[in-house]
Length: 126
Image 1: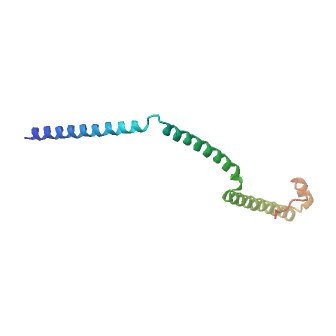
Image 2: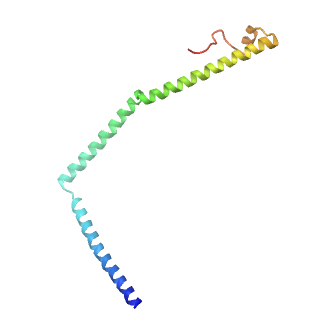
Image 3: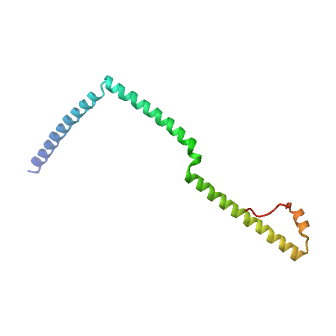
């Protein structure tokens, strides 16, 4: 009995697959009909090419204006602020070391500046 039901299952499956094959062949034929070289299709393909070229040109123009992007500008401002704060911390650290050397070793400020190459205009950034 099991052999008969198994045979029936296989036959049903073969029938379903044949039906599926017919549907797929029909779908392929319909798709190929839409791809026949017609004047309308050629016009649409030409229009597609023109739109792709226009898109490329617009992307190039957008790259030119990227420098004016508000988000990019904000990121640059934030980076500049972080760099300025870091420079001021280093300047203050140099002054702390200078003060330590002057007080601890009796060194003249001018000698310290000369020894370490600190110029007269060395100051924090406003």
